[in-house]
Amino acid sequence: MALKIRLARKGAKKQPFYHIVVAASTSPRDGKFVEKIGTYDPHADHHDEKRVVLKSDRAQYWLEKGAQPTDRVQLFLAKAGLVPAKKKTDQTKQHLPRAKAQERMKNAAQAGAKPAETPAAQ
Image 1 (cartoon, rainbow, N blue to C red):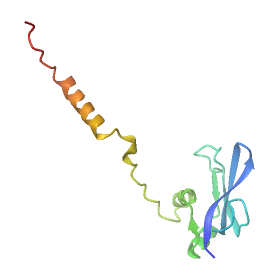
Image 2 (image 1 turned 90 degrees about the vertical axis):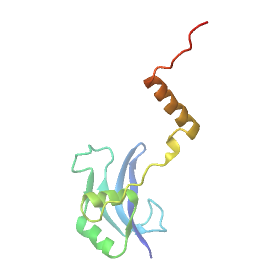
Image 3 (image 1 turned 135 degrees about the horizontal axis):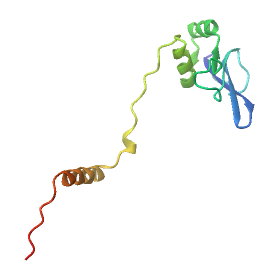
């Protein structure tokens, strides 16, 4: 049975609150879980100690048993010093203008730096 350490959503509509749980990877998000090891309140202030409450000894136990954390939970565990921080990937280049547009911008910047000479009127 593959185990995941993940978030299970609780709370009212538009007021999320999450439990950090150890669950089978095949079980539904809010379904059956093995153990609740913490909570996460996204509405709390970033510096509030109650934003993420984690039983670090139980988290360490499940990590040793082979449980795999999800990306968000891995951030929490990294801040607690239980796992190394996940390497941030580079952003894709899809947000950049295409090659012709970049060339036009480059030419416009060069033209702005050097005033263009205009031929004398005849």
